[in-house]
Length: 125
Image (cartoon, rainbow, N blue to C red; front, side):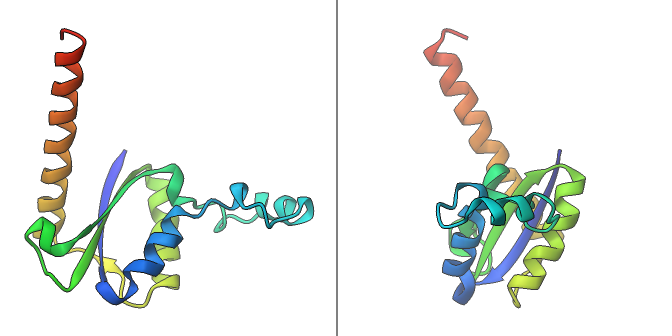
C-alpha cells in the first residue's frame, strides 16, 4: 500500500467530503441499467469510500490553516486514477509538499499505534 497526501482549499472542503463518501453502488437513485454501465466505467470505479482515507483541517495538523489535507492509503493503481479524478473534479487540489505529507503520515501512524496499543490492552496483549 502507498500513501498520498493532497491539499485543497477550504472553500472546496464540503464538496470534497461528499465526493469522498459517495459510493455509486450504494446509490438508490441508480437503476439496473445505470449500474451495468457503471461496472465498465474505470473512472467511476475509483471509489474513495472503499479506501483508507482521512480529511483534516490544516490547523489541526499544524499546517496551512487555509487548506484541508487528504490522506489516502491505497494501492498504486488506485492512486494513479485517484490523482486524475481529484484534479478533474477540484480545481484547487494538488499533491501536498513533502513536509506536509510527512507531518500527516506521522500523525496517522501515531493514531494507529495508539489504537493498536489500546486494543492490546483490552485483550491483554
